[in-house]
Length: 221
Image: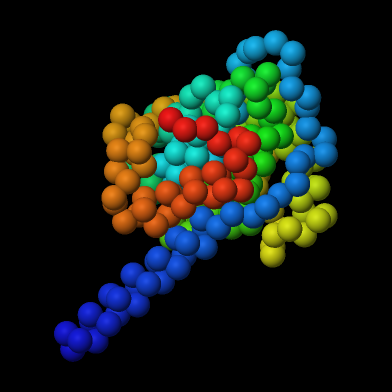
């Protein structure tokens, strides 16, 4: 009985590890055909992205050229439910999200999306990401301008036509209503806890993929 229970635990751990690795694979993608050109002047633009646990998304975008900040938080629900334990029920409408602030003179919105779709998460997984399940882990682009909406819609159509993923992209494109920063202990979690199994298996490979697949967009920290 004990041996059977131990064997079951090992199998569950292996299954979880495989799922994590599956969610951290990189896909080589083309540049967006309908991207906006780089701005001629420095400035700031903001987009909120959701795609699984916010630890990994934040870790990736903190290493992207032109990004000045990446903050873990919640979008899609009300202010009074924007707490981790409540969001984790999957009944708040919130998605674990990351607010990305970037300089459009250094990196285009299309390049932000290229990172998001290729190394930050798997955009074909519906209401889940690797071992994490629930609507709070759904894939969303919360756009803050009509230009962002246009580029995101066109890029998803481009990628689906090219059939670069085994399944259609399920990423939602939604107007940003509000963003609520997550609790302090969630900020820079991957950086502060690199030896935790979840981080080591599921999130750190994403940084390696960014460095290897998109070296022109990778910056150290």
